[in-house]
Length: 435
Image (cartoon, rainbow, N blue to C red):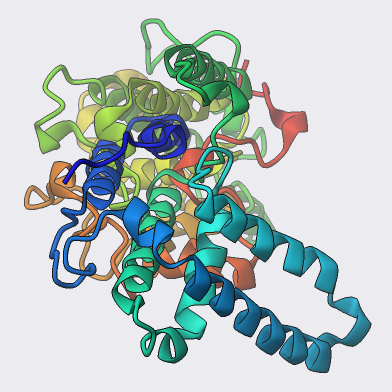
C-alpha cells in the first residue's frame, strides 16, 4: 500500500519539540515524536492491534469524516448544555464552538500546519467523551486510530512541559510548504535563551582566583561590642543577634568557592563532582553547559555577597538550592582551617556553629527541597538520567516534584520552581548586589 507523503505540519512536529527543549534535556522526546508520527502515518504504530490494526492515519481520517462530524455535534450539544447550567452567560459558546470546529476542519483537510496542543487536546477530548457512540459505527477502527494518535501526542506534550518547563507551540507559517527555517529558528532561539540566562544573572560571568583569607571577616561581620561570652546578660543577648558571625561567613565563603570550582569537572559522567540536585534538575546540569554555568554562578554570587559584607540572601531558586548545598558541607569546612592562623584569630562567637539559625535567617523558604522525593539523596550513582524516556519519565506519577510543579505549587504560591526558571531573580532591585 502506497502512503501519501507526510504533511508538513506533522513533519515539523519534532522540530517544534526541539525548539521548546531549549536546554536539550529531552532529546528522547524529540526523537520519540518523530518516530511516532511517522509510524502513525504509515500505519505501523507501536502495538498495531491497539492502534487500529495498522491503518494509516491519513486513511483513517479520510474514511471517518461522517463519524467525526457526528462526534463533534454530540460533544458540542452535550458540553454546551453542561456549561450553560454551570456558568450561564459567562460561558462563551461561540468561541468554544469555533475552537472545536476549527480543529476538526483542519484535521479532515490534513492541515496539521498551524495546529497546536490546544487543537490536539480538543480532538482527543471530543472523541473520548463520546467513545461509546462511535464504537458502534462501521468506521470505529478508523476513529479509534485518530483518538489514540492525539491521546499519545498529548502525552508527549505534557511530558515535554514537565521535563523542560516549556510547551511547544503551533508551527510557524514559514515552516509550511516545504521551506525549512528550523535551523535558523533554533539557532536564534538558542542564542536568545543563552542571552536570557546571562542577562538575568549578570552581564559578565564571575571568574577569577579566590583567596578565602582576603576579606576582613571580623570587620565585615563582627561587632565592636564583642566580649568573650562572660559579660552580663545584655551583652550576651547582643552577641546572639549577630547571626552570621565572622567565622561562619569565612566557612560559607570557602565552601561556596570550593564547590563552585569543582562543579565543572571535565568528566561529567562522574557523579562525584555533581552538586545535590532534585531528579528533575539533573538532566539540565548534565546536558546543558549554559544551565550548568548559571548554576555555578549561584555559588559564586553567594561568595561575592559575603566579600562585600552582605548576608548570602539567595535571590533566585538556583541560589536557594546552591545555599542549601553549601550549608550541608559547611560543618566539615572547619577541618580546612585547623592550622589557618587568620581564621583562628577571628573573634569567637557562641553561635559560630549555629547552622540552623543561619539557614533560617538567610533563606526565604525551602520550596526547592520539596522537589526531592523521599529517599532521593540528589546524586545517587544508581540514577541514570540518560535512560529517561516517555515510558520512564523523570517525573513519575505521584512524585513530590510532579505535585510541586503542578497543583501543589499553585496552592502554595511557589515561584520559579522548575529548573527552566531557577535563575530568574525574585527581587530585581537586588539583581547586581553582589558586584
